[in-house]
Amino acid sequence: GERGDEEMMMVGVGKKRQEGTDDGILISALQEVACRTDIDKTSAVINALVRHLSFKWRTNFARQVATKFNCFFLMTFMEEFSEFLRVELQKVYDGSSSLLGMDGACISSLFDIGEMKDKLEAQERELERELDRLMLLKRKREAEVGEWEEGRF
Image (tube, rainbow, N blue to C red; front, side):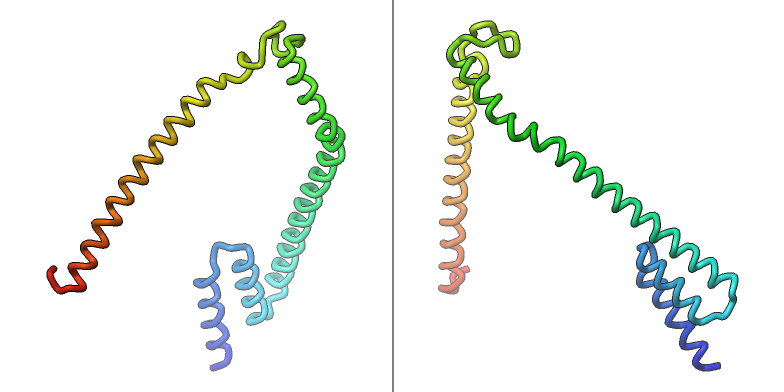
């Protein structure tokens, strides 16, 4: 009757509004089950829901196990890495390391400080030019606003 038509309209609205998402598909399927009494469809929806929940649970569980496993084994590496790096850099600086095959090379061969300084200075000049352009634009805008307020536009 009338109530069944209203329920079917609500099911259609739910489909349009939420189609494409897992939650939307689930809601529309449950609404269809609530409106109909077909046991085969109800059973199919429940089976699909159980499969979906099982899949999501397994995926989430596997992700958590992998994360904890990686964290557990990488913690010792992370604790030791900073000290290892510091010692190796000190050896390079002292000229007594064969790190990366440099055989007594100084730290300037490891880090090109001159090139980095040039890049930073070029970036500073570009930022200063950008600041000058912005200040000029600001002054123009202030002049336009002043003319607008005075009615000389």
